Length: 507
View 1 (cartoon, rainbow, N blue to C red):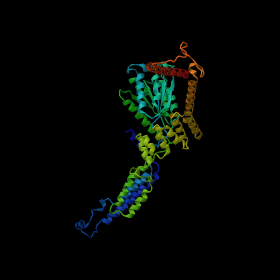
View 2: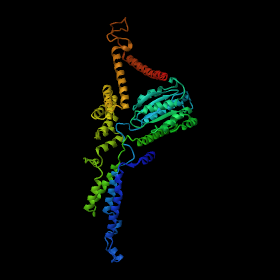
View 3: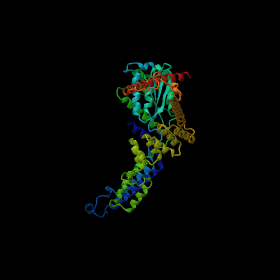
View 4: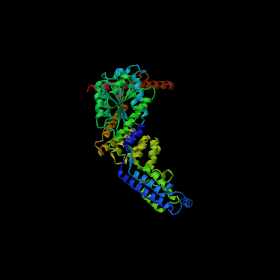
């Protein structure tokens, strides 16, 4: 229902001057209709009962005449040429859903077991559900107590967020409290580089009175970011969160109804924000009306239609551009790009990539299908800064860090103000440095203090003897080592966040 309301609110015409033809078409139809009715009436000198017996075909005013079909087709053509629209044309290189920054309260009150097992663990489960429901969408994670910290920047991969989400605990937060003002500012900053409007989700058990002003300021801006709050604090938390201006409060439910409500509110706010974004073009829906108008041309073959009406109808339909003639039945009605868009919307990205002739959409379909190398090749042939940025993203996903750096640099050459390209260029360089350092350390034995040319014997007594390890023992050692390594990874995640948060709080 919200989709219909949003669409009606945004409905308008791109070329409204074409609507001036509508009164002219109606006047033409009315005049020809009256002329046809007058011509079909019998002379007054003939008695009515005799006229009825002599008339073939009945009253012409009640029949469907050629002018009816012509007028209807011309009306459809003129309305279609006026360009009806109710939504923005989404850039295929941009996200297809709203970027979301999730701010999780990680304070002592979130350990309250009034919600089993406790508020924090339930919050983590709900956040995981939200992330899973937003597959392919970009999501960032912010943790806050007395200070706020960006746990992970916007990412499309939920697997990146999960280990950090699980590691969050009040014990690793440097300052106790619940500073929602700082968390809101950090979430807004995380969404700032995005090309499409984003939204913020607060997962908390309440809100301090000192933080109300920050939410009111956000709501009062020219382009406020929509804020949704998942309440884990019961009635008291709901009252506190409801006092914040511009915040839509969703209560926790034992099923997935709360997650669905969050997604609905975020999507609705995203559509409303897109409608108000003047930097994006409106999507022209007028071509939809070309199909029923074209079908009316089939009435040309109906007996009684004359060539003059056929020519008039053909001239009117020429105002609406049509697609190219293609082989195959579906190609009579849809262009390859339109067929590709349908496949894209049903998430059949492989088929969409084959159908698209528009290189931007084809590259995006290849990217969404996981064919990152092929997508990078398509984007590399395009001259725009957005294409270079998307080439870099595809190379990153393909683990081609050097080509990704070159692509992001190319994007910045074409558009020096591209903040997203600058940020991702820095990230790609950090990843490349880390990979090269790790490879160098592995080659030289740096982690163990053993040089590349050093020879070390673990057992001096059996030097030179061949050491054999039974296969079953080797497998056991390997399994134990892997398990110990996995445990150390989790521990290091806790320690990493604790140390990072402490450093950030000390600045």
